[in-house]
Image 1 (cartoon, helix red, strand yellow):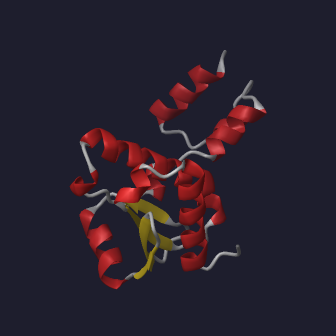
Image 2 (tube, rainbow, N blue to C red):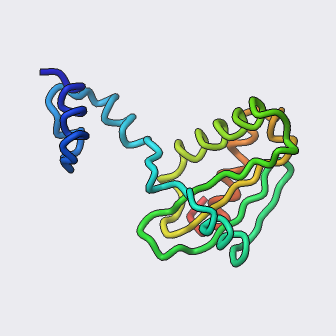
Length: 148
């Protein structure tokens, strides 16, 4: 049977077995699984965002403003807040996708136990991905106290 069947069966049954235990799962797919950005790593509730704004540290740069607050959990959670003033829905969603991809790729490098909210500025829409990545990772490492 192929891995897709086992993955679907495990999801439906609520089984907690990791995908790496499944037969026929290639190392590349195992690595991609480790780079996922699950819901447990995201800030989704308004009250969580407001708590970070109210009592968190703030750090800003030319393309991003980052708010950071301890959460007391075993992992860090990330949220993105893109204002309507940054452009149309298409432009805002593009910014959101770029920021989410950076966080997805680098979230394991950030210290655990933080709630982090990222607010892009207007310049983030036109910035190169590498510049945006460098700035965001620098802010996250500096704020969350992880080694550079």
